[in-house]
Image (tube, rainbow, N blue to C red; front, side, top):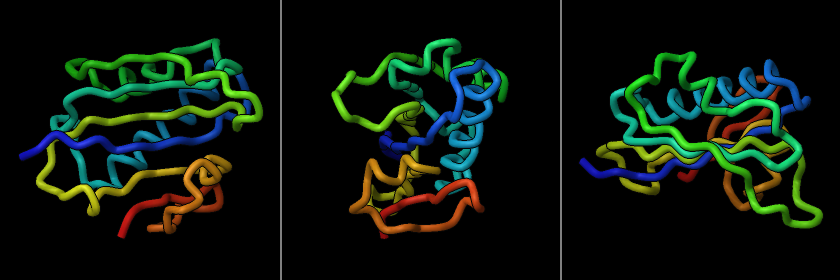
Length: 134
């Protein structure tokens, strides 16, 4: 079994605690499902937001999901002029038998613009898309 990084990103429509947690939870649940992961498969998780999202730690969503024994870290992304706003990103480090090209990296809502070269692997309803490598 190997530790692999799995990326994800989404947009939080508002800079409120409720919206950041809800948005992060949706992304985290989608990433876990898309990669057939269980909480025990996760070595650690990194959460970042753009600087315009600053009223709550996105890792609160993981804690509310019972991730009490997983190392979590939050931070802000670089403040690059013209970059997409209100973005929540997650980097999961997961123990898996999957090869890198078998992993599904998840981009929801307008965050699909962050990785336009990736093909759409599966839909996430009307709220966004999941991108992954085939």
